[in-house]
Length: 236
Image 1 (cartoon, rainbow, N blue to C red):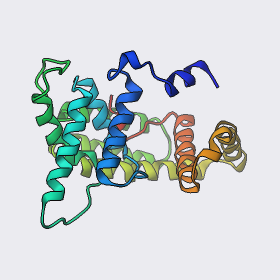
Image 2 (cartoon, rainbow, N blue to C red; image 1 turned 60 degrees about the horizontal axis):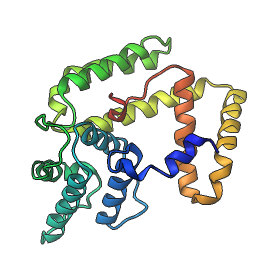
Image 3 (cartoon, rainbow, N blue to C red; image 1 turned 180 degrees about the horizontal axis):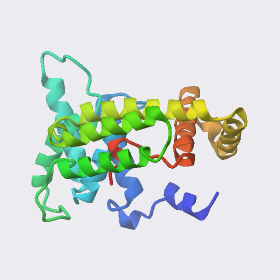
Image 4 (cartoon, helix red, strand yellow; image 1 turned 120 degrees about the vertical axis):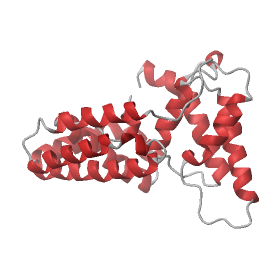
């Protein structure tokens, strides 16, 4: 194990709560606890939302208060149509809690997670990278990203819908790349995965391992093809 890995596992308490690793994990654990499902995995959009809160200087205390407050209101409802499956449900409560927390690091007004210009630039950049590939299917995806980019302003209030569309596109993109790989190329990726994963296998469930393996292979294929991740998690 490298010294960097050891530092991640044992963060410097003196840097709390500014420490990047602690901020993310504390928010994740708070959401899981409030939801009552410790095995619930945050989505890429959820991680992007956490990153935005941290970058905006919103104190960890305000984020945790907002999450707990949002779930208290949800539980008080007589009719609960659906479970809370995203941190986005707590976004407004977090912003309200931030305005009541004097230790906020940034004096700038708080804003929506992403501006339309940011979303548009991200999608245009992804489309440009897809156009460097010869596959017709990837060229068509670039056109779809162009169309989404043109409507970026509409998605600032419905990031979930945009994230779903980007997830579908990325799955198609990975499928195209996987089909173009030889058996030996895929075997090489799996062997590298096994080497990196071996020390942690005993600490993970079968479901966790399966998800990690899939994400690892998908990412490796995209990196080899020098293609982008489309999710808003990779916007910055």
